[in-house]
Image 1 (tube, chains in turn green, purple):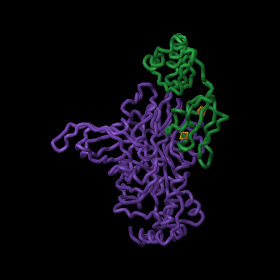
Image 2 (image 1 turned 90 degrees about the vertical axis):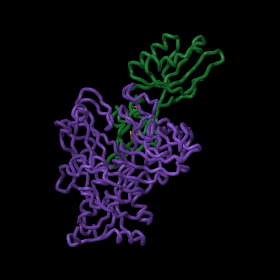
Image 3 (image 1 turned 180 degrees about the vertical axis):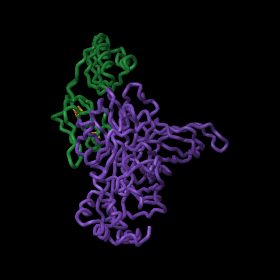
Image 4 (image 1 turned 180 degrees about the horizontal axis):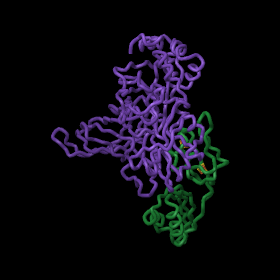
Length: 141
Length: 391
Ligand code: SF4
Ligand code: SF4
């Protein structure tokens, strides 16, 4: 499972086409639209989180580019919902950087954002879905 | 059990009287360890009346019986969905059972592998507890007495005639430690297991876990009052797959999965932070259940049992790559919970990372909450009508 937040800029000719729907239909990707708007000169901008297998993700992005869509990675960060986190430790199985670690002997699970590489492995691995990936800037529009 | 067997003898009634008068002495299953170590079981039993335990972990055999109230015109629902999660309706007219692992109808399941299982029965239970409105849809074939064939409505917990948590298997006494000996990552109910046994996942609160503190179920049975999902519930039966006859240590601790609990309680008393809908990547939906049992220290034997620590508790390392899926449970090695909690264990002379799925932090919080309830006189011991089968 692979997930990234992307900023898509559609040239005004493409705005009408349901390109994003083809991502789901043809590439089995799921998407979560975080923001979308059509700018005055009719250029469309959309921020969405795209999730799927890494292979399909890359194929989907290539498809968008072929259609003339400008695709950019949104700068993003991973946050933990501390009210939801139950301090189980399941996420420590996948975190490659040690940003998520267990404090012993108390067994509390700590999240050190400075060590986080935003790989997003923990996002679907967390049973309570307490780890979330969000764009850090609000200046897309 | 004959009275003469023990030097210290207390009854449930005596302890309950002490709870009512405010003189009761309660400690957690962590605190009793040193008390017994320093003073011996007899002194400990003289002084301590109750030891509280706790566990908070995914427990798949969980769910709730919901009576959603009669409609006008009346319906005998044969299919029911709550927030588009199917609930079993092969019961009386407006009763249904929402099971924790039932996924939402339009969930892609494992078609996009590994599936995310974002919403299921466990989440419905959590949403109800959070006071949220849940969409109900019920269909029926129609009868003379129940002519209605279709109902859609919103329900909320406070307005439901009845909602009873009914979990046929909770609080497993011990559980496997899972590794993956294959060359590919696998996604299991024991979490994500990386190839070549890079990580070993385990799921028990160890020394705080209820059934580790009363290994022969001498005080636990039908009527034992417990902390369940943030409210007070009861043990009603031995759980499914209850298997007391497995190999045990000298102290009576089972070396593999053993006893289980069937528990019930009124959902209207419960809280969403202690019943959490969860999503196990590539496996399915479930419910994390908060459970705590007070162990009455009726005698020095019970003091001794509750004094077990992680060094006394062992489990088996099982391969979930090939063995487990094929119905085999060959042990690749035995490890203690002290080892598991240290962060690494040895398997075939190699150090591997251990990963807990059960929250020790929350287990401890539950034992503390239960202790607080008892001390304040808000929780009396329930004397079991009979105890769980021990052989
Ligand atoms: S897996 Fe999720 S709930 Fe468990 S410790 Fe990590 S962030 Fe918290
Ligand atoms: S995003 Fe990656 S590095 Fe950051 S906490 Fe999650 S798993 Fe660790």
